[in-house]
Length: 110
Image 1 (tube, rainbow, N blue to C red):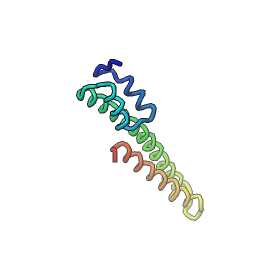
Image 2 (image 1 turned 120 degrees about the horizontal axis):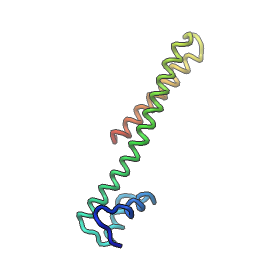
Image 3 (image 1 turned 120 degrees about the vertical axis):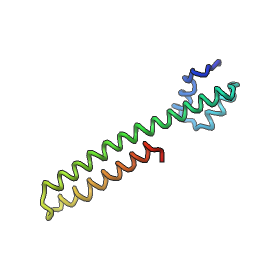
Image 4 (image 1 turned 180 degrees about the horizontal axis):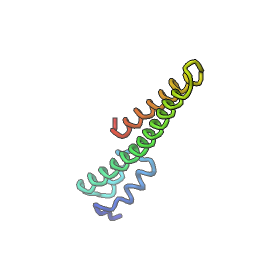
């Protein structure tokens, strides 16, 4: 199989099969790929992995922001003596904050 430096279809197939980076590297070495081509393909795999994490991070960030906003608004709409106000203040807001922090961690790669 002849792989050019810009042809990443086979590498993407290996990534979507769930192989780790070292397994993909071994597979590409078996094809007789030069070091320059190998580095380019491994960089592409890392970019695919980071893009997947960023998409999940932005989703978590959006969900967390909506939960925080809902918790804040619902807390102001109810009196503080009801159990419902405590749930919205401490439940929705804390879950939203954790979701925002988790999303930020995935986006930043922490």
